[in-house]
Image (spheres, rainbow, N blue to C red):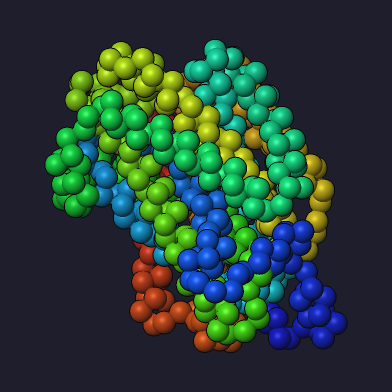
Length: 449
């Protein structure tokens, strides 16, 4: 079942070494000599593209339900989830920079053909689930802002393939600039939402400390597990390990060490911003819905409709809808790249970006159209939850190989995980696996009841 890259014939190894995912972008961004600030700016970007997955529409319903039902209690869970994400994304970027192979390529190098195909299929399912959440989020936003029917909004999202293709021809920095602009839009919108909602900042600060009430209350524990289990997106680990290689660092230990340091700063800053945005969604829901006694708000559409009347701010609902639209479109860009990286990495197969994007979009659009036509907005919410459960199912198939590879000295050399890092990694991966199993069983139980 397992093979070593060193066991391959020389010709095969040579063939492998010249293949890089995203070859049109590989090592295309120059690293300037001189000050650390200039170098840090050159490395800035991949972390923000990864951060998009931590604030996509799939997370919104959970954050809203957490705030509306339990006030500021579960902010600590958002914080813990973000710290886990920072840890795992650092492992992903270390793998990519130290070995020159992304996570998908490393799986192909190490496992049997059958196991590699299985991992690829699971990852493609996870990407389709992610794309489904993006499609639904964008469709909900178009419906809320412009009253476009949900089914038609789902179809309109297919046109964003043209935007993605245009950006890919403009260079990788253009994609990063668009992503950063959309993240900025989301951040500004929720900063204004917090201003309108006037949260109790003392209680917000207290919520950052874990409370025993979370474990004591089964309903709070269920939502907490949902936040923890669905925060880390599996495709982000594949994505990050590849796009850090767009920087043209030298193939020397000193240069790689510097690249890892600056890429870690980029990732940590970006995921800190993602934490603030997720926390802002929860805080806004607590300050608005919980305070007004509306503890049963769980749907994104309900939150949009109730914000302006409850806050007495006509712009509050529009800002919420605009942030949702920016979130959905942002996730589209990174989802496209993740799909390309996974297919090229696992299969050493490259399809035209337009074909790859249309295949993924159709897989997401067909069930979304059917559900919206038959069950309407309620069905959309259930489909969003299902997409997060699918992501949870696949997560361990990405985190455990990542930890195994980065703990392998033969693969990583001097960049191998320390013993403390490995122990922390196994604890985090084990916890995520347990929580995801719990989340999946609880969700199935809820559907059957």
